[in-house]
Length: 143
Image (spheres, rainbow, N blue to C red):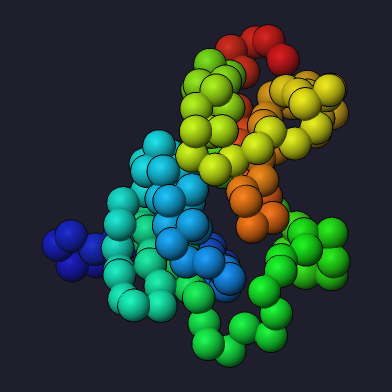
């Protein structure tokens, strides 16, 4: 590989593109979350914005080709994106700050074990209905 270039893994995600009905709202909620998770702004154009982490980038776009204005995570298609979020304390800090940035905690009665025994994660939904899972990847021997 040349200087400054990362080795790429065959089969790894190159990018994910999410079409949103309200780009400004998405930039606020997703921009905060992605920044907290270590993603950096990558591209910006009138109908979209992207963030990069390593060789992977995530695009939010308000395409003129949208067939509707409502996202339904329970319909066929993508249900949610899951991100490694660090320690359980890091997940808790994100959950505490999330409502101030347009996110709502899903399954609060089962949080932080909504994914089952031995898991520690938060499930959040933004104001447009998109869901993310923030997974604690360092349980430190407790779950």
